[in-house]
Length: 445
Image (tube, rainbow, N blue to C red; front, side, top):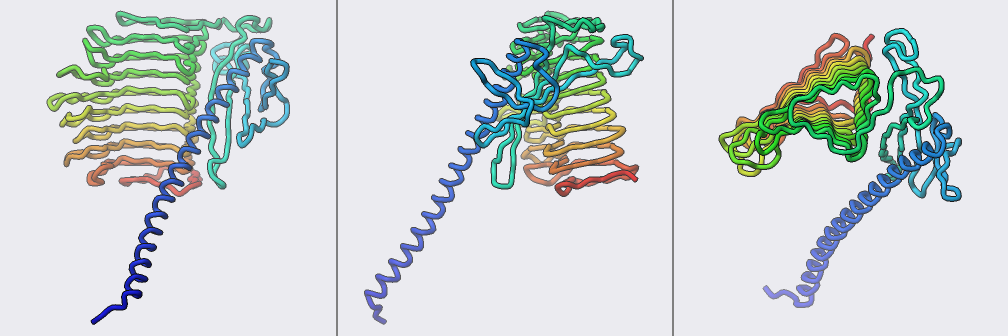
């Protein structure tokens, strides 16, 4: 049978045009996706810059006149080379909204002759939040917050009757052996580049910090008791203070390089306080590292006991392995006990070894529990048959969960889930995963 050549040519042209259209559509989609990703990254970078500028502006205002740092929500103006606070609504900077929130902090423990446990406003301490909001999509907004704490140390109020005085650390202070730091009567502030370094020499080091005032770790400040090349295991950090605010890092990680045959277990972090705040840049880590097929290094332990728990950053006891390590680094344990639990940060006891086991997370809150846009995970990303998820136990009298994930799974193979047990209103929910609907709220009767 003969085929009309013109018809054949038309068919071939049609097929070619169809293929071209499909390829062009795929390329256009890929290009648009990459372009949109670059746009989002640029927006986040700009937002971070504006948030940092907000903190720097508040610092300048405070240095010029402490009284100008008034409580409330403000915008900023830059006039004649000086930053000033606007008493009106937050400022608009192109597509961004910047809000500077100034708050007072209260003291306890017989501050100004008050009764034990009664809160009294300290006139010489301010908490400053620089908050940037923008639209990342037509119906979706994004927010970045930076937190800093300012002290009126140069000219304190005459009415100030606390024995707390400012003690700032802005350089590296290194410890060769276990130490107890009794800073009674001091508001301890670990500034940018400030570092209490108790990393192991021949043995893990224990660093104990006590104050009856406050401990503040600003962004870029550190407290570490990590492993070293001579002893890979992380040490111990004990902190006791009425108020602890973390925008920097607390770490008892094992040694993260790769010496042959070295154990690199995570250490121990103990924090006991009335008011614990962890900002978006704040980190508490106790990681373990496995380097070879015959060595298993474990994630560490983090214990937190507080009244108010307000967390936006990272708390993690992960166990990691370097390439070609065949065994099973097991993640560690996180214990959190509090009255009120407010969480928009990540809490993880994950493992990344080929046969690793997820860790254990225990959260017990007496009153309210709120977790939004966050992950609480004890997952395994192992690729071998014995990998499995860990355990999560979450007890609360009131549970409010928004767009959050609570997971204890073997992520890679989805074969061996662990346990997630949520207990609220004296009722027990136990399952392999917990993925609540956005906006789901459970209240006790």
